[in-house]
Length: 88
Image (tube, one colour):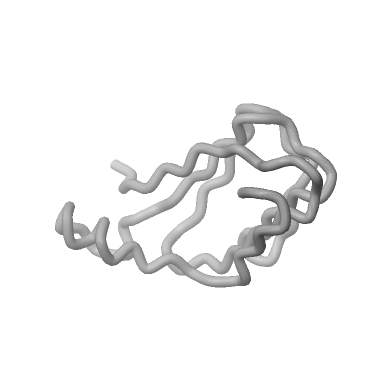
């Protein structure tokens, strides 16, 4: 997420993922793995809970219906690995 990027509160629909893998939306999850330590101005909100101060390797996971938002008002880009899939 580059500096000054903001993703307002939303839910993921996973339409392409559902179509390609023929899965129900209720079975799909998303995880975000932080690749670097938190830097001032980098924020993530998941299910109305603010996340900051993460360390490289920390992660957060949410379900398709979970509200989330992200903002980077800091001076450095935020790097993270986004994973979408189903749980066994």
